[in-house]
Image 1 (cartoon, rainbow, N blue to C red):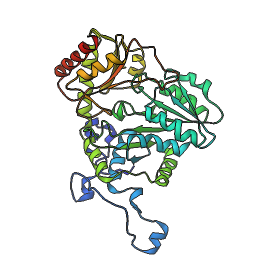
Image 2: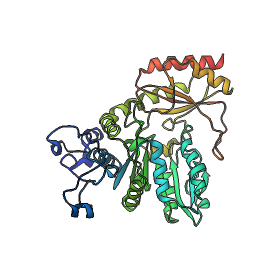
Image 3: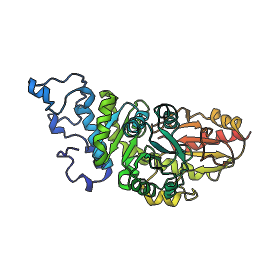
Image 4: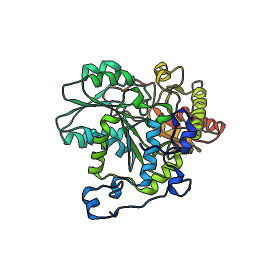
Length: 393
């Protein structure tokens, strides 16, 4: 990434300082604190020679603008990456790097506890394109060596896991994968680069649904994909070939959200831990699936690799089925019933594990995923008690 006056020595600065100042230098834009929102398709060249050689920084809107560069450079500063692409959604941040690095005849390993739309893409589009897809246990660690084949091209990780929050041994998986010449990708949306930096742990491609904590207000769709030096060029060229670029207004909204992500995430973390700890003692709750809790089976692994936790976790109800699950959800008044997370408001969704082939449980009852927003903890506890009472009635 290009360094500017605000970036010098940024590695020694605190995270909130970096979030406030990364990505653009106000003095590049006449001193305005925020970068311009550049709406661009056509970019004019000074002369025919420049046009023939494409010898200028910006050539067409799909290949980047000052707005997308500001966000990409800010993400690079957080991830420690060689480059970042900005795409229209979190799902696009999954599909584009997979399309960039797998081909017909390749073998792709995906953690079985992956975000469902990632699985759906692999089971439909990638299989139709001739990619061999195989799912593995999130706890496999170095044991993934037994699944590596001569044609294994990518190992896809997500830690903690979607909905069930198993923690993967990313360094061990990366070591085995690299020995076999495979690329390691990670969906790092849960922790963000504030609490886990994938490239520091052996990951080659870090994926983030910026819709979540970076945007922070449940009103923008965006994704980012960051690569290390050896994989950046191929990622970028594939991104340009696919033409899957994000709109400037959405990019600006995420850059704006990024400035406050540190303080928001700290609040999410504090409230979620308070509620998760409290839930462990509540009647009707069999288990709380939050890796930052000492009771979580992967807590030591989480503590080794992560430096914080976010605001989303799941609970397992003490018995019952869909009827009790729906009764819990329908009794909620503050928690909204809606997908996504990372916004200011609390959300709850039923968890379905019917698509899994390895990581199926067992669980004592139905699962419910909770996104803890920025509301007061006591109010959220009261709302949850109403849900538990309805589920046990």
